[in-house]
Amino acid sequence: MTAPHGHHVPGPQTSGTFRGLRLTNTLTRQKEDFVPIFDDNVRMYVCGPTVYDFAHIGNARPVIVFDVLARLLRHLYGAEHVTYVRNITDVDDKINARALRDYPDLPLNDAIAKVTGKTADQFHADVKALGCQAPDVEPRATAHIEGMVEMIQVLIEKGHAYVAATADGGEVLFDTASMPNYGGLSKRNLEDQKAGARIAVDAHKKNPGDFVLWKLSSPEEPGWDSPWGRGRPGWHIECSVMSAKHLGETFDIHGGGLDLIFPHHENEIAQSCCAHGTSKMANVWLHNGFVQVEGRKMSKSEGNFVTIHELLATDKFGGRSWPGEVLRLAMLMTHYREPIDFSVKRLDEAEGILKKWPELVPTDAAPADAVLAALNDDLNTVAAIQALQKLAADAAKGPAQLAVYSASAALMGLAPVKVDMTGLDTAAIEAKIASRLACLEAKDWAGADAIRDDLASQGIVLKDSKDSTTGQRVTTWDVKR
Image (cartoon, rainbow, N blue to C red):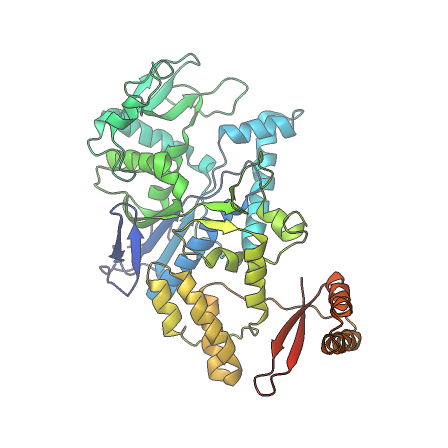
């Protein structure tokens, strides 16, 4: 049997086995042994970007986290036996609004194509710079409209959806009360939702929590023909259809950010299980934590909203641009389920680590047991990085150590950052450092500080330490990128 999109070599599928990986399942709130449905067809779906604007640093976190998991799954089960699907949402009211704003003189469909094309291209360039491999399949919502109409028809026929009249003409809504265990992922129940609902606003709904599967489009809005009139899909139905198309009705892992648990992932489960008659959509649900910027929630009103592109190519954050390798390590220095405070200090720390690492070499060596054990423990990248730092220090001992270090770093998609020494007058720098040491010995603190400040203005950072044998002051220098 092949995967739905034909990614795998045809042949009988073997029942899943445990190969050391344990993951915290949002569905059960417990860390569990990961056992795929089939060893030779391990399947993962992750919600991708809505391409109306450049991806921000919060969007980067799930891309990096699930890239590491995909690499680990390929190592454990074989690259040819893993299918990683990450979608692109290219139909959305935010996209329509951006198209009207940016290209008011173009027909809407042409304007939408310009917005989604430009934004998707930038997303691909950004995540490649972050060291992320491309998913095996990257479906677009607009290529799956027919499948969405078919799934909605099934839900209506099975009594899980209904057509409701609205001021705009009409909608097809999912009937949340038709699913007895609705709310199982987020642990919310319908009574909680009713208590906080604004009934007047939702008068056309049977239940306040009912959500849109299909909504009618005005002549000025993009739309597709359907049994309920020309319209467009709701957000949640898109992922239910794309995941089923490329991974099957029930698959192994579904991932995304913490903010997607409710309503997006909850509603995906409702649609998929009710349409297919299955008890689960995915066996394991994984969610990464939020990203703050310099201790505050990221928002444009706070002035701390920063895109991946701005971090990579402008001086908006910390007065300089940052290598993609540094951004990736900074993300992985916190466990994926914990919140991150993304800061200049964190990036400086990550860059300092990566500058000490030797170049990677091509190798068939196996990753170090310590790195693999850390990643197998619910993607404990913090422990894995600690092990990698020791491997990097040991890499100078010989080719075998260098090979194991290289294989371990590659498993996490990490690479060293090298400083460009071109154009630097190293002799002059060393002379100034010697002058500073003389000032310090003479207790001329002001003179020593002036030399340090002068070098700092040129991007030269000094580090003082003591010789372990003589106890004398030793000063080394580096270039702050």
